[in-house]
Length: 278
Image (cartoon, rainbow, N blue to C red; front, side):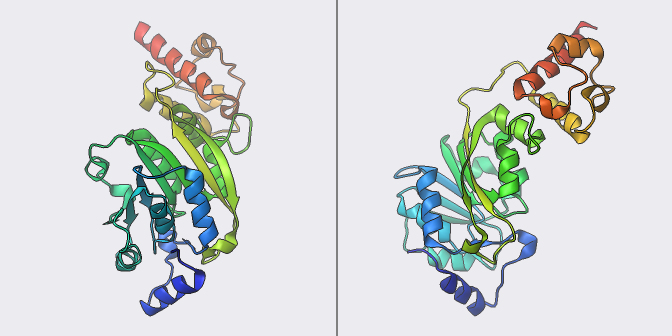
C-alpha cells in the first residue's frame, strides 16, 4: 500500500494540518515515484535504512515493501501519529520522532556500520544534512536522496562547471556521486515550482588521502569558493603564498572552480608542509 494524493489530502484535512513551508514539507503522493526510489536505491531484505523526513510515510511504505529494516525519522510532532498509523502493519519499520539536524547518530544507528540513507529530503535541510552525514556518520555507507534539482547538480558537479562548488568537493572527497533520475513537481503535495533530482552517493571504502587534515582542507575549499570569481591568489590571499601554489603545482591565476578534489588536497598539504618547515 502507498498513499495517493487524495488519501494524503484527506489525512491532513481530517487532522487539521497542512504542509509546513518552514519545515520544507513537500509530500510525495505518487505510488510509482516512491517505488521507483525504493528500487533505484537498491535496498532489500536485511538492509538497514534510515529515512529522514518521513512525513506521512509514502516512501516509508515503499521501502518497507523491499524487506529492508526502515528507521523513519520525522521532526513534526503533529505528523508522527499519522506516520505511525500508516506504517503500523509493517513490523520492519521503526518510527522515531527527532530532528535530523540534532541527532545522536551513534545512539540511533547502534552497532551496525552499514546503513543506507534513503529519503525525500526536506528542502530546508538537504544540503547541510548530506554534508554532515558524509563528515560525521561513517556508518552511513550509501545515500540515495531526492532533492531540488539545483541541489542535486551541486552535490555531484565536476570541476569547470557552474554548479561545482565547496559542496561538490566535499562529496568527491568522501564518495562518488551521480544523478540517478529526475522527478517532476506533479508528484508532490503541495507541488513545488522546480524539478527534483534523485542523487546516488556511495561512500568510498577508504579516504582519498589519509594524510591530509580534513578540517583544514574543507576550510581552504570554503575560502576559495567564497570568492569564486576571483583568481586563487586573491581568494586565498593570506592563506596560500606563491611558493605554496608552486609546490602544489597550482596556477595562482586559476579559480576555485578549476580545481579538482585532488588539486585541493595537494594545495592543502603544500600549505601544511611549508608551515611545518618554518
